[in-house]
Image (cartoon, rainbow over all chains, first blue to last red; front, top):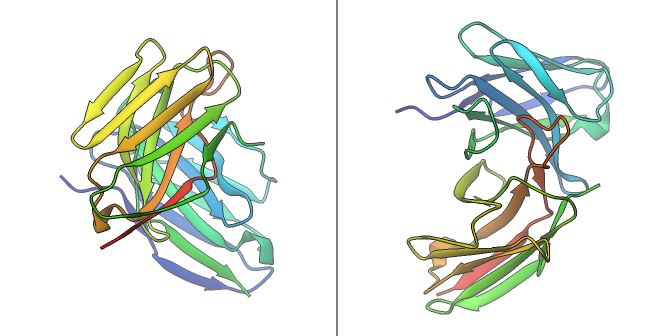
Length: 114
Length: 114
């Protein structure tokens, strides 16, 4: 079956712009999580959605937002981009409502802010 | 702050040797997972071990969990050049609102030389 699909793979944006990243989970998976990965901070949790509801949110400013659609596809949006937002953004999906299963990650979107 | 920390940060071995990576964490957990990441791409789920389990095997992988010491180890036997990657441990947190959220360590960079 198809894995987790993230689009686009690479993105270059200018400071102050906004960006929307997309994640299509594995068919049937209703939980989608987003992570930011940087060399300095490592993997940091952004938020998680289950059945269109945000269940958990990490410690990121309000410029970072997300949503999930009825087909479980998810988007995250970053407004007023800063240089420090340059990172690999990963989404992960799971079939489980609770956390006792592994997550399947997409290949990520590499965002560069110039 | 990081929940988990891997040790060592980097490990370099020859093909055929065994590789052992350790992970320590801070709080009570329900489960601990290990992931592999090749060169800035997505994470691949390797194994999940629940807090009431002490050891788990999957192919050449062996994971142990010691909840009294809040530590886990990942052993890769008979390493191959294709095992070259970063390895991360990730935990949930028992109690609290952590649904859908994993806490990652900084990872161990494993290099296997042919």
